[in-house]
Image (cartoon, rainbow, N blue to C red; front, side):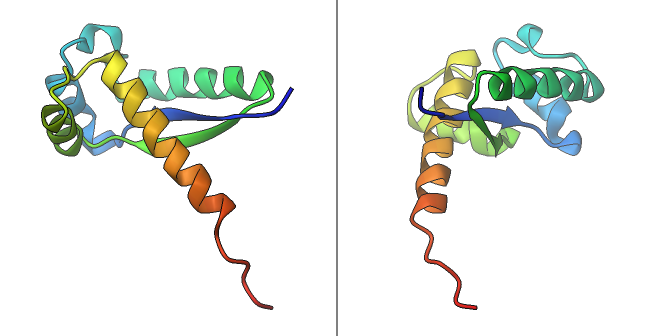
Length: 103
């Protein structure tokens, strides 16, 4: 089986209260940043244990809210997954096609 890249959302501590404010399903997210860190660690282990690779995608509240509005999406789990997946794919391609550094 071929390993895949999995985009997971990463939030910054200073932005986390705003994240909870903009998400329509904030009740599905950890209520504190420290709880988020525990969940993120568990999510990463799950992906790695499947043999896949994690690409952490930073999600900032205002930028994500704008991204959702531009696409007529609710700021919810479905949109977060799409955002992470699209950005992880772009990151994976960027890493794959990055020119080798001359030594």
